[in-house]
Image (cartoon, rainbow, N blue to C red; front, top):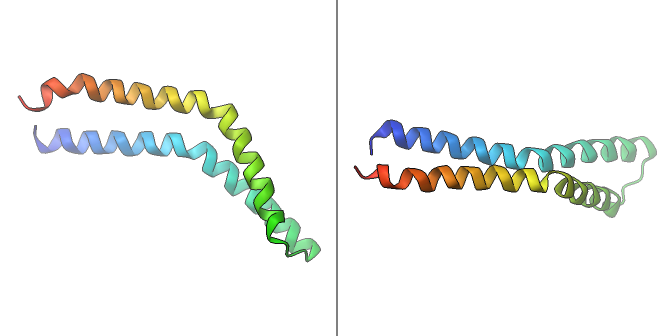
Length: 89
């Protein structure tokens, strides 16, 4: 196993992590921004007003994107397991 294989494996694993995390983090960011703007406009500083909508939208995003996230991770791990015999040659 040479350095280029290790770098390629690390790059691919980071890309999979970004792809899997992006839908949940993106929805949390968007809802947090909207709730923050709403709180600033109405001067309501209730902590649960920020938390509950974010939690609900993240659960919805997990329901929508969960099967895709699992399939991306399964494909990645299958590729990793297929590479194992060639790693130490």
